[in-house]
Amino acid sequence: MPERFGKWNTIYKNFDRWAKDGVWARVLERVQALADESGELDWVVSVDSTIARVHQHGATLPRHTGGAIELAGRAGV
Image 1 (tube, rainbow, N blue to C red):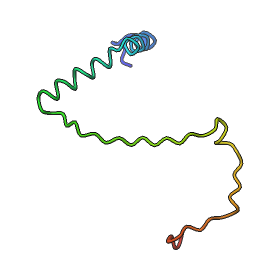
Image 2 (image 1 turned 90 degrees about the vertical axis):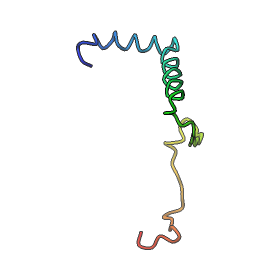
Image 3 (image 1 turned 45 degrees about the vertical axis):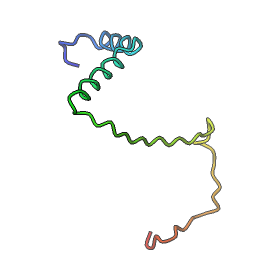
């Protein structure tokens, strides 16, 4: 951080406090409102939220796949 902003821990404390107090959410709402009023905001939304729940230790469990798997239609791979 540039020195003009102060010490990093002061910056962090302010940022954290503002986040907990909802300051950043209000800033976003205001910026969105201004952009919407001026016609600069397109409200078309696309969300891709894929969630796959895994056991706490699932990533480290041994896997028994039975050997190599041939991918259909993938010649030369």
